[in-house]
Image 1 (cartoon, one colour):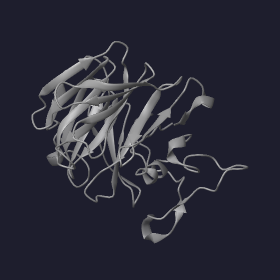
Image 2 (image 1 turned 90 degrees about the vertical axis):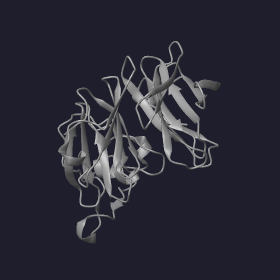
Image 3 (image 1 turned 30 degrees about the vertical axis):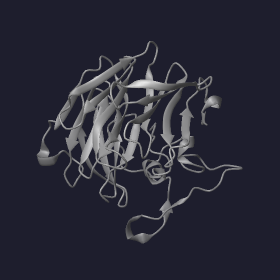
Length: 277
């Protein structure tokens, strides 16, 4: 059963198009069965021919049994990419509801995907690497290449989270910030895949990271140790604040555009504990 997540407030259509089930962060009605007390599902305004369609309609199923992450691609493409547990990336036309391309990105599961500019995509994997891909119009690697443009090598265990940092204000992204099950966070030069710095904290098994909008170096990070950490990555990354986050592990986070609030999603240790704060 697909398990999907994405940036706050910008992926509702992606959730609906993928037909995700039991995903509270997708909003009321998305991916939930109809029943007493539940609102009817929203209608899909982008169906071919302009006709409204049921948002529960599924896209063509990919090969992977589980889809850990989904994200919309940039540049006005009208495309979304889904990460697969078997190491594949699947790119869909979200308006026509068509599978455009599927390609092998890693030998192990793809945990996270992060669009970068109009034609590039970062993929983070259980194989302990991050790869940068240059995409063609159909969402497949440009020129049919099976090799990434860059590979970021250094983590010793699965890379579970990543985001990019830019110059002052809203300048272009220059730095990649990653977190792993090896209890480290690391920064990398996006142009060369060179590791810049790393910081390890015992039991800090990273589950999610998100850059703070409008800041060139500030990142929020969630962990299996039930802590939220605020990092400053201007030099060697170091936590500038640590907050106990509660009894349940956060598996996804996002930051409001003004940078004042962090939204967190938790899977809990039972179905009843799934939720956000």
